[in-house]
Image 1 (cartoon, rainbow, N blue to C red):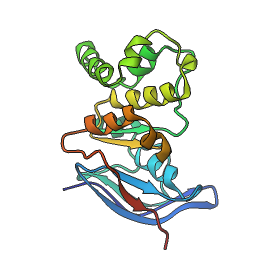
Image 2: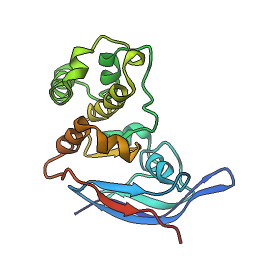
Image 3: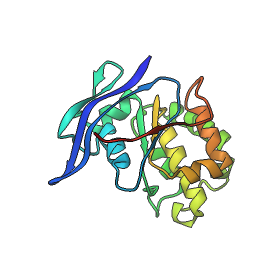
Length: 196
């Protein structure tokens, strides 16, 4: 079953065409890597899927729902979560506060506590450092916090704009692949990004 479908996507930054005529289908229950050189449009595609960037043309469907042009909170509510490039943590907020921001659409404190407990189970270091400012964490710990914050929304699709080396080198990140959903494999299927 197709979880995400992109048809003829074009995205500009002013007059600069960053993404041109990209089409792809992503099946449910798979881990897919979008590979390409610096500046090839990988981050722009993820930002456009998550609603942070508008497309010039094309369509993006999450299941049967067209999502381009949709408000960001509605996209998150559908089950898409973006872990942005460069972590984008709030440096003067604690680990706990950063995690809670990932659950901002959850209305039940009990549900937020339950999801946080699951995240702590997979990343026990974050529980030990819950009251520490995120700026005081090491770079690797900050990466884990960024991933954990993305998981707090209970996403059906987790978009990770991170370097492949970060995923390959950290054992904790392999756990992320296991907790994203049932049947999600822990290996990457390479899908190179090409332009026409």
